Length: 77
Image (tube, rainbow, N blue to C red; front, side, top):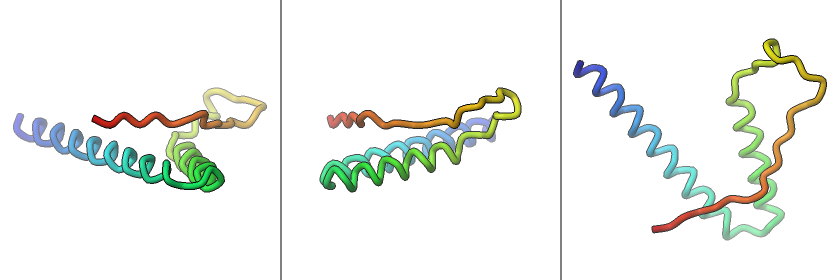
């Protein structure tokens, strides 16, 4: 049981670290000019798509997947 608890705790810590890193990146992005923000958002979208498992063999499509970022909300508190 201790192994399960440690593994769960480790996953929780990794998740919380990742969330904080994303929050910091988006806060820093707010200070960038709009053109640079768009470049950064496109890069983030590309990397996110690269992380999603390829399920095209299960669901064939004829249209490419497109991602459009409409905005980012940052809550401070």
